[in-house]
Image (cartoon, rainbow, N blue to C red):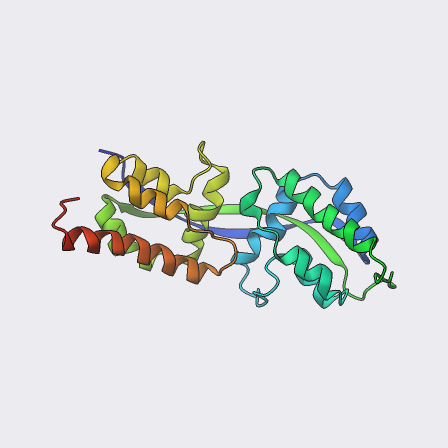
Length: 225
């Protein structure tokens, strides 16, 4: 029998890098020079943990800055559809952003503007983990308890876990697979959930629905899982 699922909470500590950009050319130059993967992680993933984040249309910081400060809707839309889930390495994600910027700067209708009032500040972050001392003993217990997880726990176990687990899977999928074939389908259903173009509240609702439906179907068909 697998070990109980250890529920972890977390909080985000932003760390200034001292780097900033006042225009699009400077943004590209900084991106080419700053190779710290934690910077990319902060500006794409950690936005979900920030309580003041209120612009779901532009899911990452680069897209939001392009729209609100550069007033370049075309670039903002291109940057906003970049999904970090599709990149195994943050360096590849960074290069894709640079390419999108270069493509925009090469277009005939692009106009170089003066420096904006509010520059783009490059930040990185440190994740502080907190043991909640909550232990989930069985998959059935997970179905009962997941709706009560904090959203920060959802971030830790479903998003941040992807760079911690050897397989690149989320913690729920890894734990359910350890229970054997009876939970293999559920583990794969969870793995297929895209965590990016959503909020943590919506992500938690999706997880809760998928897990509870699994056991509802099992009961309806007389399965003993």
